[in-house]
Image (cartoon, rainbow, N blue to C red; front, side):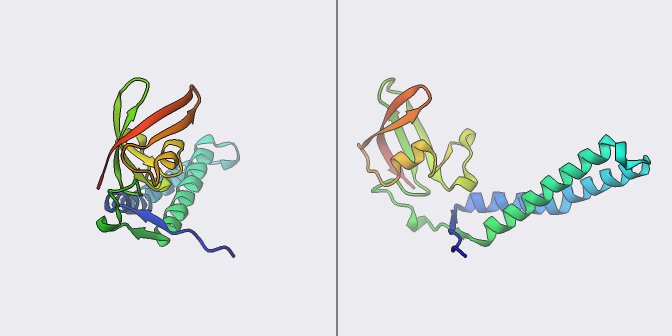
Length: 159
């Protein structure tokens, strides 16, 4: 069996995953069990769409719980001193300048399990994330996007 890859998480990412797991186990499981109980009370479950929906939701929740438990089992908290500032690493806060428009964007490079674009957290496995990983300030990287090649200059790397 192949050794499972360690998942590096920030304190915030670890807390978010643990909170989601706790919510699924303590709240969502109960809610879905209650929905199933109510659907069964309606009678014939063979043609009961409410019962089917509740069972599907239950399967989804149980699957997510298993995924979170597996992720947390192989998770390791990233220490601040592991976040480099000489080159882009996991946990780095990076300012990128889009070469064509001159527009700046700041992102934090995180593992794929805690990436959330709307919060400015991009995965190290994403096209931009993998292009900037290991690069220093002033490096220019090219990223293949649906609209074509986009070039970014790394203008700042910090913790």
